[in-house]
Length: 163
Image (cartoon, rainbow, N blue to C red):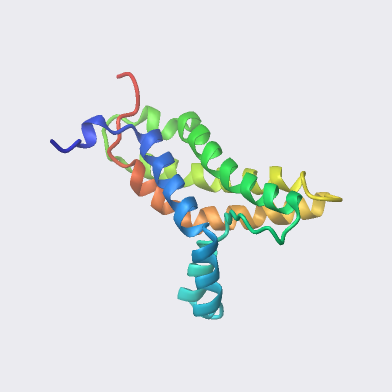
């Protein structure tokens, strides 16, 4: 028996989609493939490289701090996506399932989560500066803007809590 939308929560579906995005496209294998096989000067190549933004790695050549900060960014992206999906009122207050407010709440949650994940992980870098934190947050928000529609689609039609 397949589980339909009746059993899917909007925050749960969006968090699962974010986890899949981070695990698949943030993996070192995909990131290396995207760098080696795409042209970042084309729209498609730029987007495929952008998908690899929340990279995580297990490379022993990097410093421990760089590995932890990179992995922390990917972990924080998923955790903050769940938090913002739960907190944003669009998906909670919509009268009917599948409304456009659920889509935009999911998309917005991913934009906020990516921006804040980048901002917070910048604080753990050696010699962090405010301008670097702002640049990182801008890069994260840019990632969320262009990839967050996937999270928005995942949240459509989900159960929003008590009626």
